[in-house]
Length: 278
Ligand SMILES: C[S@@+](CC[C@H](N)C(=O)[O-])C[C@H]1O[C@@H](n2cnc3c(N)ncnc32)[C@H](O)[C@@H]1O
Image (tube, rainbow, N blue to C red; front, side, top):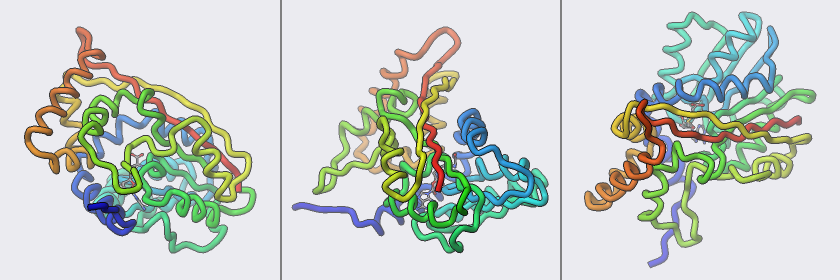
C-alpha cells in the first residue's frame, strides 16, 4: 500500500528525537567547534549587533557569537526542541553570557518581526528542516537590509565518511516514501545546491566554500556511542529489527576499519559554508 509521511509527522519526529538526543548531543556539538568558528568568521560579529541563530541546539554558534557582540548586542537562538533550549539557557547561565536569549521556535514559522536582525546564521539546521525553503524565506524576511546570512551543512555522502560510515549501511535497509523520498543528513549538500536554494528564497550574492576536518575516536565503540546516543541516528536504528541492527553495526565497524590506525580512528567530514546577502 503506498504511504507518505506528512510534514507534521516529520516535524514531530524531529522534535521528539532531538529532545531524546539533546544531552549527549552536546559532546557531538563540541566536535563541530572548528566549523562553527569558520561560520562565525564569515559573518564577523561586531559589538552591539543583533544576531539570530536558527536551530541552535544546545547553544552554538549563538553562545560564541554572544560573547563577540558583547553586552550591547543581542543573540537569539531558536530551536524546535525544548530540551535543546533548556541546555542552551543553562550554558548561557554557566558561562555568564547575558546577551544570549533562547526560545523554542519553528524556523519555518519565525515569530519575529521583519528586518529585525543584523545577521542570521545556522549550523547544521538546513539539512534537517522539513521545508528548508520556508526556513530560508523566513531567514530572508527577518534579516535587515544590508545584513548578512551564513550557514553550514554537511557536504555529500562521499565527502562525509564521518557520518556515512553508519548512515551508508542504514540506507541499505531504509524504505523511501511513495515519492521516493528518503531523508538523509546530506540534504542540499551537493555542489551549488544551497546557493541556488538561497537565491530562490530571495537572497543575493550567495557563495559557497567547502572545508574538511578530521574527527578522532579511540575506537569503533566510542564512534558508535557518540553518533548513536548523541543524534537521532540511534533512534532510527532502534526502529529496525534486531537482525538489521546487527547487520548495520557490523557494516559500520567494517567501514571504520578503513580509517583506523595505531592511534585509533581518524575520519573526515566535509562541511559546506554558504554566505548570502538579503
Ligand atoms: C544538528 S543539530 C544543530 C545544533 C547546533 N546548531 C550545532 O551546530 O551543533 C540540529 C537542530 O535542528 C533543530 N531543528 C530541526 N528542525 C527544526 C525546525 N523546523 N525549527 C527549529 N529547529 C529545528 C533540532 O531540534 C536540532 O537541535
